[in-house]
Length: 450
Ligand code: PHE
Image: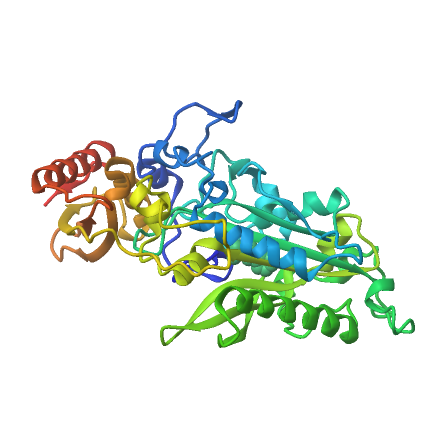
């Protein structure tokens, strides 16, 4: 979900999403062919496969578990906060942590189990990394929620890498890291001081799935039809208190925050928590009261719960003043040696090792006549650039598109800004990479360079 501009896919609707099958195959960049081998499992590729070798190279890097890495430090801060906030009288933490679940999930886990409708825009091929029609790299850690609930867990944190196709700039990267959480409370505990109160409305029959309402009807920001106001208000109050406490534990007590109404198919009501940073409100997490239908399907009865998900990069970039999301992937000791997890409370501020110059090159091309301009997904081009240029492609922006008035041909112009995080790039080196991008787009998609 989420860093200075990392957005929550589940509330964002992009306009250009309608790739027809023919065009998506035409534009599917350098994809992995036939049989895909991941973690010793073989997957047959199909018309949905859009994993690239570059993306596959991030699998297993596990930078969020790496010693003295700022993402790992942020992960530990959050886990520590939850351990302290929720423990039994003997001091045993209530929450368990799952931080090594494979990022390969089924589309059922990523979407269906979370009541995300079949036509939801977050499923678009242009926004997700699909292994094939059935499997994908998770787009959020919420993908594991139902399985963990089914296994009998009621308080848990999930930490891991998530994958989303996106634009490239200093705050967006196709791989980032999330902490997701679930807390479920049974009726007896929730109302231990008020035994007359109940979680569910009297007329609600908890075995009738239809009575719970389908996800597109979930727009009531107060509560789900099945819940009593008392139950929702209690869990909402607990959730907001705990999450406000968490951001204050990270950023200090004087931090300004606000809750903004939001929509997620798997929670209702839902909110985003924003914090005031450098003169702007920045969204840092999504949260809400869990949809009862999910608890029901997991076999959890007479309980209500809250869930949230946050992006580690965004928090770490703000706290440590890290200016560019690509730095998290740096293997350079100049970056890594600045952080030290032995004292998590100590405030580190990142000091740029040096600022290497940027180098901007433009590329303009005519699309093949049979390809309508709306069918071109810029994310396909971003992936192509990333495959060839790797992480030195700092920004790729579509800055012009037009249709020739006479011939009807469509033209697109992209600006690619190159910068190496650790050294100055030579013009020769950049020209070579840039011309390889040009060649590759001609070869693969039949465009004509202008
Ligand atoms: N999965 C959501 C996202 O990635 C975040 C979220 C998790 C929201 C759990 C509500 C509850 O945007």
